[in-house]
Image 1 (cartoon, rainbow, N blue to C red):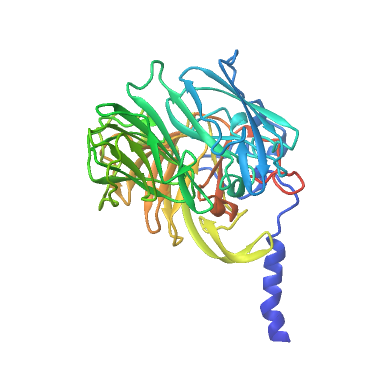
Image 2: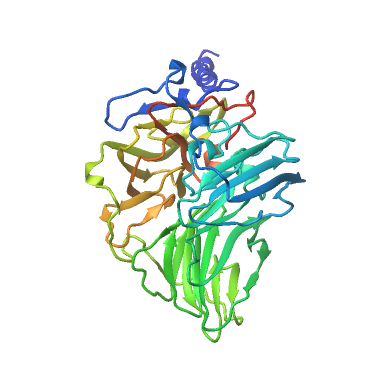
Length: 462
C-alpha cells in the first residue's frame, strides 16, 4: 500500500494541478516570451492599453454586404443552407461587411477569415477576439480588402468539430479588372471520408474550352497536407497563401503540396485534349475535355527555390525579436485528462508560450517539429516569409505563408513584421491537434482582451 501511494500520490497531484479554471483569459496562460527584448505592458488586469474589441476597421460605407446564416442539421453545419458556404468575391480596396446570424448552432459560432489580415476585432476567435454567437444572435465583421488573393472563412468555435462538418467557405479578393484569366475556385473538403471539390465528389467539370487561360484557386480546408498536380498540361504556380509568386516558370509532371488551411493558385492554358487538376488523387477539377487521370508525380515542387528573388520590405537580419516554436510530445495531464499530449518548447497546455511583440518589430521564428507527426502551422493576422528549410536558405521568389507544412524531424525559419496589433492565435491547423493543446499566442504589448475562454464563458475556440 505504501508503494502504491508513492506512485499514485504524485500522479494525483499532477492531475489536480493540470485542471483549468471554469473560464480564463488567454493573457493569463502560458509562459511570457519576449524574444530577447525587455518586457513592456502584458498583464490585462493592469487595466492599461486598448482592448481587442476597439481595434476595428475605420473605413466607412461598406461596398460589399453579405449575410450568412449558420445552421446545424444533425452532424452537418451549413451557411445559407449549403456547405461549403457561399463564395464571397470582392475587389481589392472594397470594404467588406459580413453579418453572421446563428440560426441553430447550439454551441455558438464565429467566422475566422483565414489568411486575410483583418483588424483583430474581426478575427473571429471565440474567447480571444469575440464571444461565440449564440442561437438567435448575430455578429458583424468589417474589414477592408487590402490584400489580393485566395482565402477562406470558417468557424473558430469548436473548430475541430464545426470546420470538419462544414462550417466554411471561400473568399476571393481580386485586383480591379480581374486576373486576366478565367477564374475558378476549387475548395477541397472531406465529408464523411469522401474528398469533394466545391462540395462535389469525384470529377468536378469547369466550363472552359481549349486555348483558354485558367487560374485555379485550390483551397485545402482539411486537416492534413494534400498533393495537387495537373494531368495533361504544364502549369505555373502563381500564388501561395494569397501572395503572388515572383517570376513563376512553367512546370510539368510535378506535384504542389497544399497543407491544411493553405491555398495554391495554378495557372495553365487548357490544351485541346483538356486537363485535370488532381486533388490528392481522389477528386479532380476537369478543364475542358475529360483528360486521362495520372498518378502523383515523383517530384514535388519546392517553393524555397521556385521563382525569382524580390524585395520583402524589411531586413530579417535586423530582427529585434527572436522566438523558438519547438513542437514535441510527451505523456502527462491536460485539464485533468491523462494522455500523450503535444508540447511547445517542452510545455503542455496551458504552459505554452505567449510570444510578446511591439508594433513595428521585425520578428524571426524558428519552427521545429520533433513530435512524430506532421503539423500545418497557422499564424493569424500576419504573413511570414520563409527564410530557410532545414538550414538551406531560400533562393527563389519570396515565399510568403500563413499556413506552413512542418513535417516531423524538420525545421523552418520564418520572419515577419509586427504590423497588425492584437492578440493572435498561432496553432496547428490539424484542428484536433489544436484542441489537444498545440496552440500558442502572439500578443502585442499594450493590447488586452475582455473575453474569456472556458465552459463558463461558453467560448471554446478549438
